[in-house]
Image (tube, rainbow, N blue to C red; front, side, top):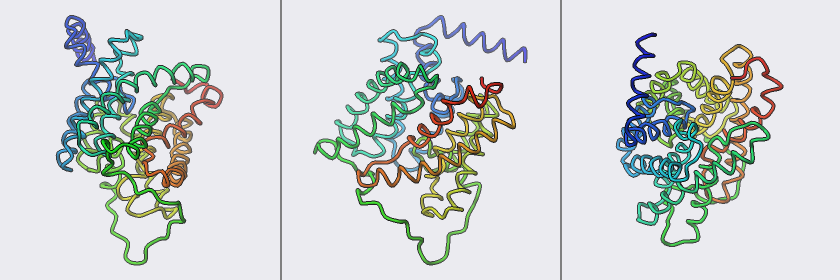
Amino acid sequence: METSITNKSAWARFVDKNIFIQFFDVTLRGCAQVMFQNNPLTGLLFFIAIFTGAFLEKIPEVAFGCLLGTVIATLTAYISKLDIDSLRSGLYGYNGCLVGVALPAFLENTPFTWLSVILGSIVSVIATISLMDFLRSWKVSALTAPFVLVSWTILLASYSFLGIKGVSLPEPTLPHQYIEPIGHHPSIDLVVVVFRGVSEVFLLNSVIVGVIFTIGLAVSSIWAAIFAILGSLLAFSIASLLKADIASIHAGLYSFSAVLTAIALGSTFNKPSWRGLIYAVIGIIFTVFVQGALDVVLKPFGIPTLTMPFVLASWLFLIPNQDIMPNHRR
């Protein structure tokens, strides 16, 4: 324990001496903050996972977009001279990180898309500040709402501009009751499904990526890793019980928002406890319902839900947090 503290203080002193190393450190923390971790090593592992997954899935632009978005958002925060503690913790970088993942994932790889990534990353910082001010009276965080709002705007705008074309956006259709296909259900590999749910936080569908993300979480917080696995497993179970679309379940699309809700309610804003566990479980289950509801609402618009199910469910549970969890809050 003593060695760990010494190493940490040595790294902190090293970072403080060089602005370029400091920027590197804050950029890594920005990526880690997507899953609420203020740890540069976690951020490094996250970037490794993203680059690994993106190249395995032959979408390297997602990896470079993630890096670009985090760097631009962090640079914007530095130039704007925002709150130094929040900046150094990476709290202005994670929404830009996700914008950099989402836009190249859903849009054609053109110069206009990359300009949109830069613009979206800058605006994500402005949106973060706006939402932080707006939500201050409720004492809740902006979470990933800035990323969702900025990305939705640009993705919807792509239908109006020939220079920005969607290539992986959902097909706009009117909502209808899901009809379970007749035939043999695919066999379930629970480990694969659970780790895919974790990897889908960054829009990647890979067991390897999910494992690296979980290791990255454990490096910073073993409880965060445990709740991430719990969130993915429980969301998979609930979606399967409710007979949601099989392909979506197996791809982890019902799990990734639940993973974030689990970490938020179970280990980030509340101390791990039995009461916190019950509260997180209820939040996870509700997140699955919000996921299904938003899938229906957004289907006619042809845009993905992104992490908005997590945002809405977590806000709902975090606003009364001080009343329901008075002795368990961090």
